[in-house]
Length: 204
Image (tube, rainbow, N blue to C red; front, side, top):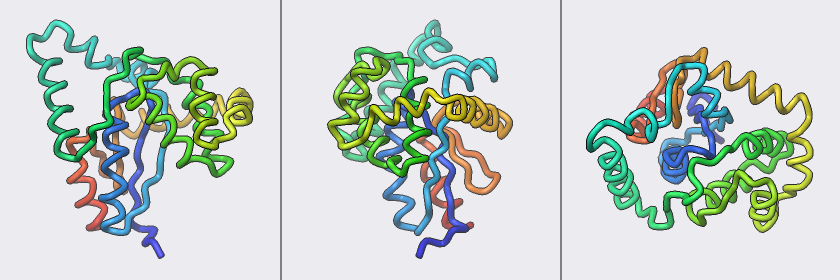
């Protein structure tokens, strides 16, 4: 039985390629130490707005060499972890509001894992325009997810408000970008901190 004291909060949005990369590696680490991952859906755009942050493509657009180095770091990460299926989405950046609302619905109906797996593959392996609800529903349905029902549920005031509230909670915890992880009250930002996340969870 999993030791419930060993939990890792993973603040997540499909919009972030680094969330995809972290999602491929973190489960193996968590399994090694018997930790549970709790996915915390938030809207990255909402986090940026609330913290006066910007996406790296905007924030570092005028910094010579910075974006090129970021892509080099991604390549190193994918090579280290054997993530050969990863590709930058040609439709990037993508508005993931609909996807994130439907993820909350999927959590409520017990379809979280299948939903996340299919959504991430569509976004960061297959290059699909997942901001288009019809494209997203088709890809999710292909994975056996009841996408029509989830997207219908995602339009309820309760689900919409939960995403707003959970994003605000994330900002209150100190989050300014994604992926961000918490072990207890300790915050770790970025896929480069996964080893630290594992160590902190193991010691908890």
